[in-house]
Length: 288
Ligand SMILES: Nc1ncnc2c1ncn2[C@@H]1O[C@H](COP(=O)(O)OP(=O)(O)O)[C@@H](O)[C@H]1O
Ligand SMILES: [Mg+2]
Image (cartoon, rainbow, N blue to C red; front, side, top):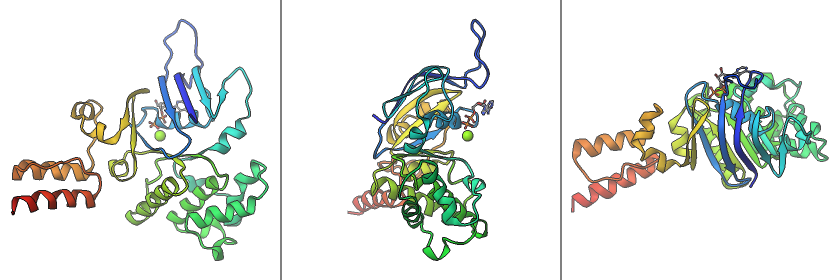
């Protein structure tokens, strides 16, 4: 197990004994594998998603409970090598393009591997840039001359270059146009399917959850209220309602069709292609 959280509590304020402490994460138990996972963390603004992301790569340390990352226990008392953890669990912040700072694209992407004292830093940076679709003739250009979508991809390459096993993305599709969003999701799917990285995405966008993720974690006021397969989540109408979540478009549309046409159809389809196949199956049947 790569990440193992047990009864984790976290507060931004100093925790005082015998006082009502304001924990923004409460009794979180969570296990995440070091490969092949594709997890969405959803929940309202302020539910603790970004805080959890920072616990997962040891930028924040919990007040109580156990955070075990690749066999190292992160604690306030005992010093562990955090650099090691941060190399293995890459965190891409919201609007990561704001963190670009070097004068060339290549130098910017090499910053991580250099910081982690990795030997083949230039090679790693070039490979990461290639993975995100930035061509070699652009490597010596300024990152600030790029388009928004390209800047975000360069920033992601900066995390990828250190070759982490687990990648966490905080709201990665916010502010991107539809094409930029599709390109980014395709990139994350490629990293997951071809390089077997575990991907964790914090998102409000149910289309992202629907088309890319396998497992979903729902946070509500710092409490983990659901952790399971996305199909299990979307089939649980009560849970969706209780935490004011939304359904993906494919399910909404198929639900309408099912009710209006009164046909027996499996509405739990997560891509346009699957929705189309299911409609074809049912309508084809009824025409026979
Ligand atoms: N740096 C901080 N200092 C104090 N409180 C914070 C800080 N960051 C977030 N919070 C508070 O912690 C809670 C959880 O925030 P956050 O993890 O950012 O939620 P989310 O990402 O789900 O919107 C919120 O009540 C927020 O106001
Ligand atoms: Mg957030």
